[in-house]
Every structure is written in C-alpha cells, then in structure tokens.
Image (cartoon, rainbow, N blue to C red; front, side):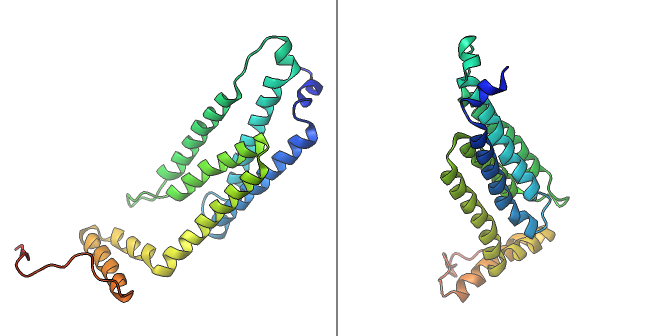
Length: 201
C-alpha cells in the first residue's frame, strides 16, 4: 500500500493534530486518577484515547482512499467504532472486576471513565475536536467533584465503615442518612406510629 495515497484522505498534519488532541484529552481525564493515586492514571487514559483516534483515522484513510476504491474493497468504518466500543468495554470491566478483597464492587467510576475516554478518542479521530474537549472536561469534573462531594458529606466514609461490619452495616447506613436529613432540616420520609410498631424478639 502506498502511504502517500493513504495520506490524501487525512493529511499527516491533520492526523498529528487529532492524535495530539486525543492524547492531551486522555491525560486530562487521567489527572483525576493521578491526584488520587489510583491504579489507572493519565498514561492509561491517554493511550486509550490515542489508540481509538489512530485506529479510526487509519481505517477512514484506507476505506476512503484510492487504494481501496481501485481494488473495489468496501469497508464500513462504523463497524470499527462498534469494535472499539466493545473492546474498551472489556477494559472497563477489567477495572471494575479488579476490586478489593472485601467483596465490594470497586472501580465503577474508573470503568465508566475508560469507556468515555474511548468515545473522546473516536470523536477526535472523526474531527469533532470541540465535542471531544467538552466530553473530556465534563468527565474530569464528574470524577473530581463527585469524590469531593462524597468526602465533604461523609457519605463515602460511612459506606466504608458499614462494609467493614456487614451485620450492622444497614442500620448504620440508614441511621447516617436520617441524621444527615435531620441536620439539614428535612423531615424523615416516613414515621413509625405506635400502632404499627412491631417488636421482634
């Protein structure tokens, strides 16, 4: 295959620009993991975004290039997107399955972020750079602000303590929520009357 013919569809300068933007946006999303010292950091997210963008651009260049047209080769680039979504989904599932030994489901946020970063790379490969930047910024804000809000409210600590003691975990979690509602001036969602109160011995 002639590399010059492939470059006619997506010039090298455009290829480099899109790949660079995908790499930078992947690093942006991965900064949250670096700040919190998570196993998945900026390097992993950057590689996922870069790989998605490059795979898509190379496929578009070949499918729409003169080499494929002259030989009558028909390629549907949308099938590559389907394959990328499925493959990146496996990476995200691996991040979720590899949790702690206490039986809790961990890494759900990281798994979802991997999936979104793949979408960022696909958007960059198609040339939707502004849309990709918006996706990356929103993802970073969700990851960063979400954990900050949980830590501020003390929800994460309460859930961790409840998981350490499964026997009393539910009671502690419910008690914590009701205490937070009372502190905020919100009435409890239910009230137990004396006639409906049941004692279990």
